Amino acid sequence: GAGVSQSPSNKVTEKGKDVELRCDPISGHTALYWYRQRLGQGLEFLIYFQGNSAPDKSGLPSDRFSAERTGESVSTLTIQRTQQEDSAVYLCASSFDHLELREQFFGPGTRLTVL
Amino acid sequence: RKEVEQDPGPFNVPEGATVAFNCTYSNSASQSFFWYRQDCRKEPKLLMSVYSSGNEDGRFTAQLNRASQYISLLIRDSKLSDSATYLCVVNGNSSASKIIFGSGTRLSIRP
Image (tube, rainbow over all chains, first blue to last red; front, side, top):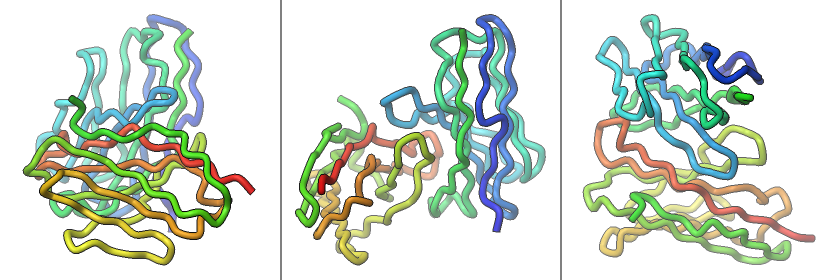
C-alpha cells in the first residue's frame, strides 16, 4: 500500500520567507510526528499529533514553527521568517498506535535550504 | 550528558565480519527500545525492536541491559548491503517528546 508521502521533496527559499511542508500519513495511522534532521546529525523531535488529542508541541524550536493536522489525515508544518539555521531535512512519520510505540513509518522527507 | 548516546563511528569492517555497537541511555524509566537503519539520504526504517530477553532476526541480534542502561546490536556475517547508519531509539514514557533518537552509528562494509 501507499507509504507516507511528503511534499515538496526539495525546497529552496530565501531567508525571511515563509515555507509550508506537507505530510500525508498512511491511512488509518492515528499518530503523526515531525522531525528535523540536520546534515550528519540525528533526528530532532518537533511535534506529535495523536488522534483528536492536543498536539505535543514541546519540540518546536521557536514560535516561528507551527503545525496543523486535519483529523487523522494531512499535516502541514509551517516555518515563518525562515533563517539559515532552519536548513535541514524535515521528516514526517506515522504510526498506528503510539501508546505502544508501534513502528514509525517515515516519509522521504523535505530537504529545505534557506539561502 | 545526552539522553541517548551512540558511538558515531564510522565502523569500517570487511565483508563477513561480525560487528557490534552499543547505545547508552540516561533515563532509567525508559520502556521501549528500537534499532532503525538509515541509508544515505534516505528516511529511517525500523530494523528491529529490542526486547528485555534479547532477540534475534537472522544475522541481527539485539540485547538490552537495563542495569547498565544500554542496548546493543550485533551483526554477524556482514554484507555489503549492511552499510548504513544505525539509529538507536529510546522511548521514555507515553509522551512523544520522550521518543529520543540517537545520532546514529555509521557502518561501512568493505569487499
